[in-house]
Length: 249
Image (cartoon, rainbow, N blue to C red):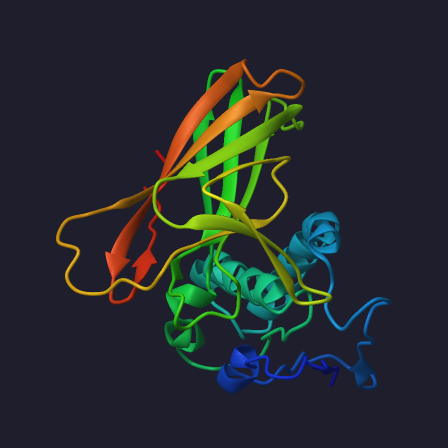
C-alpha cells in the first residue's frame, strides 16, 4: 500500500483528511512528500506549471481505480474535479482518494469541487477554472479561484491578457507559500494565472440578484484591442455564492 502523508501549515483546515484517508491499492512502501524550498505550500506559478501533468496523472490513476472497482466510470470527471479542488485549496499538498468509499463524492461540498467552464469566441475557446461555490465564512482559499486561458482551434495557447472587473467585491492574489494576500481592487489585468475574487458575506435576502464578474480578453500588447468578452455569473446562496455549468456566458 502506498500512502501520502502531507504536512499542513498551522491553522490550515484539513478538509480532505476529514472526508477521507488516502489508500492507493498498490504494492510498495509508504512515501512521504517533502516541503518545497521557500515554504510548506507551492506557489501559484508552481501550481499552474504542474497542473497539466497532474491532470494527466489523475486520468491515469482514474483508469486504474476504475479497473479495480474502486470508482465508477460515470464518476470519473467528478472525481478528477474533486482532486483538483483539493490540489488548489491545499497549495499543491493534500490527499488523493483512491479507495472504495460508497457515495464519497456525495460528501464533497461545492466549495471543494473544481468547476471547468468554457466559452467559444471568434478567436478561440476561453477556458476558465473556478470553484462550484464560494463562501467567505467557510473557505480555505482567499476568494473564488479564477484561472483563465484562451486556446485556438488546434488547442494551442493564444497570446493574450485578461482584464477582470466586478462592481461587487474585489480581486486578490495569493502566494500559498508565504500566505500573503495582496488586494488588487475591482479591476485587474493578468495573464490568466490563478487569482481570486472576494466580497463581504451576503447579509439578508438578496432576492433575485446575481453577482457578475466581467472578463475582457485583451491583445497581448494592446489594451485597446479586445479579442472577446465573457461574464461569470455568481448566484447568491446563504452567505456566499454558487456557480453552475452555465455560469460563463
